[in-house]
Length: 195
Image 1 (cartoon, rainbow, N blue to C red):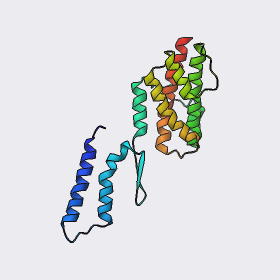
Image 2: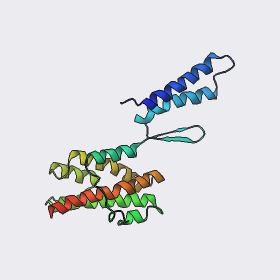
Image 3: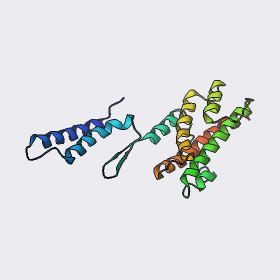
Image 4: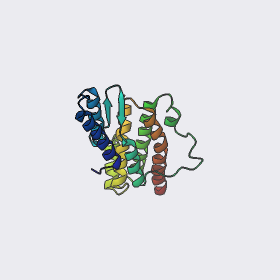
């Protein structure tokens, strides 16, 4: 685990406040100390939990989406879009405002269709296989890299959650609408090379 400077700063500041709160006799250990301890611990929980909800409804979300995007970028899955590509071409983009869960499920379907097309155009027998199995077979046949597969699986986890009814927040939807078309363009390019 790589320690980030902000983690150290937040934890050190909270620990100093806890020490000051304990040292002075007029300050007793109470809910303030408990909150300060929670603040000291939160930056370190990012590797264990996606989010932490503190008393009072404060929710801390960690950057899994950014990590998934970075992995996809490193894998070469995010083709740059030109002005023509920036138009809303896909149905999942058009319904994102009204139904984010359905939009993410639509993106998942589009990715799976492309993986299936890549497999079929390379004479691989494809049954009713999901993204995980399809992408594994494509790696085994040198049609995807392991890094591309890993990035696709990271993203498909998010899309599967949405398809199964988990609440999707606005940031997640925006992220998918930014990253999704770029992944599809990369997969389309793989299909076009084969033709």
